[in-house]
Image (tube, rainbow, N blue to C red):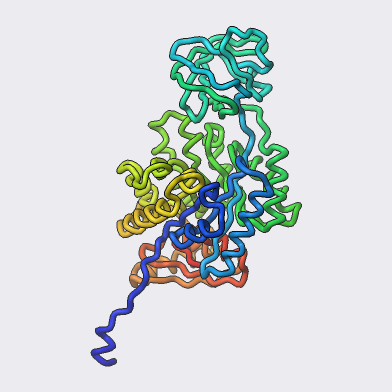
Length: 427
């Protein structure tokens, strides 16, 4: 070998191990904006079924699929179901709620025009709550305590006030609600996802393993292959997390609603516990909500947001998700670029390595672990996996090789797209 050859350096492009999920909305719905997000580093496009309708989402799906024909790395599509929700009814204008004053929640329209009240679309509100329970409105901006339970209404005291408008989301922290796992709209949207060969369906407000099994049956009965991402966003989901994880294809830590349902100081601890359990079992995990929230209106994130993102990367989560930042924000492309830079830098440091608690239970898993250990000992830049449905690629990724990119070769386009959610995998 000539000295000239030995001295030559082969440049290798830095590859980000952590994947990025972007919510597509009014700010990014056209073809050019979607292409910009893809160039900036988007791996998965999220469609939020709480907004828009099937017709508008179909147009976005067509644009993404047309773009995929031109991209070396196709974009996967995740449909996020609206799920069962409790919301306030219509209010003329708005209501200003002050700390200490009395407010009523009713399941029938109030007949007393002088009392401050709002109708709620949940028929079991009265039977589910008791004196001393908390009600939070509009993502925790307004908080109330139940003082008295009457036949058709709850008498409450305002703990934290604010301006209440129509159709605001209500949380009942610690209360086991009698909502269905899937609404009729959710069922229609799942069939829509199957019809359009979408890659993932995110199941909102997952409370039990049966919720996941119900959704999976609908997908399989319709001949679909979408993978189910269970969203953990309430106490019941946390209580049943182990059984939910066992039947799910992946997990999303939906920190918005979850942060309202549990004490705020518990949220970072629970995030780390969920990421750890997902790492041990080899399930992809998405950290979502408020990653770069200030960038909806500002061109730069706060220092706290940068640290929050870095911590999720340090924990070795598979993916980070942007919501309003890319759906309605003023700087969607810049958000992705900043997320990319933070992740790339943080990945140079040793992570939490929760995967070390992952013990193989079958021959293929033992093979995956051995490949990762060998790659680490040789400082190998790559591990090559040949897979059809992506199972072996998932298993190798679960053991979190320290420096190696996992190149997964498959002859199935659907598998190729789905693997874009898995940390360190390049399909």
